Image 1 (cartoon, helix red, strand yellow):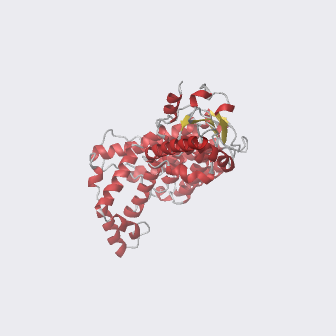
Image 2 (cartoon, one colour; image 1 turned 90 degrees about the horizontal axis):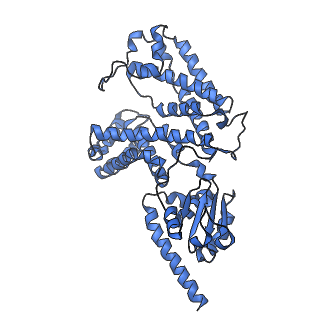
Image 3 (cartoon, one colour; image 1 turned 135 degrees about the vertical axis):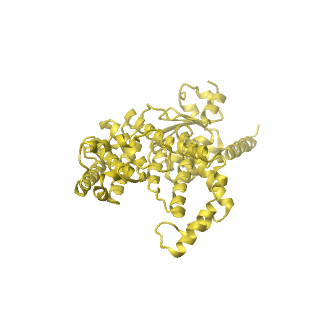
Length: 425
């Protein structure tokens, strides 16, 4: 393959995450820790005992604002509410015992004690308790994503978890650490993209233009003058009194939801989609008093944390003035030994490409076999060097890479001309 084709391959935006790929353990370990912590926090933050005092006729799954597509909702079966056709409904003490059992399972799983069994127990009990909420008032309690992640953990191989049996090593690599992350990203991506599609179907693609957050902000401010509210924040609401800012926030949220499924194949824009949804949750909390902010902890799991520990090998032309300056600096900033620098003339081919094919360029290959070129190489290096992390984050701003690339190319050509002039004929 020629240098031009290699260069184009290194600059491509679409990079599929893939299902079966050797991956480090870091991301899966973070999933395990975050979901068990979050579920324990949720279960300790509210009491389900009140549902033990309600008569049977209250558990009829009211669906006041939706079209009845079938007589019995799926939640009736998935939350195991059907068992109360033959069993008496539990007393408050029994429900409290179930809640404590789920909390205990989450804490044990967080500590690495039989984590897969704990994920199964926490998922079954958490789903069942959510069924009580759904059966009585058809309300969503905001824990749906956490339950989905618990299910992913429950389906994951036992050897994937950090535990007393398996240890906590980050050096292990296996497909068993990767496909659960892929599955979780698929679930979260489908969840938010379907939410955006639902807005488009119910309202239309002009949804951001009719959102009018400025009216909601005015209501939140007026309410706060007379009613002490734990959620609505006048200081935050005042920033959204402008209809133009309302339109901008609506468009970012709408695009963020519709495009969230692209976290599976547009790695550069994952951070944008994650932050747009975190911002949406923050606005909903402070303007409408609806608290989905806890889901933000789960959304942060949609960032590729394994990029921090994946090694990358760079092949560069040692005659390039840029690399003459920056190669030694990168070696000093690479505190964890994630970056390998090799000059073109002192190395063999890269991924089957001959050294001669990358003359005048810099290319890199990470442990996943992905090829990067030019400024994309520096972005990947910055991801692995703590002192350069801000540069890596800046490169995730949508569109910025297309402004930086020509600037870098002109700077490189200018440096070559300057060096050639100094060396003379």
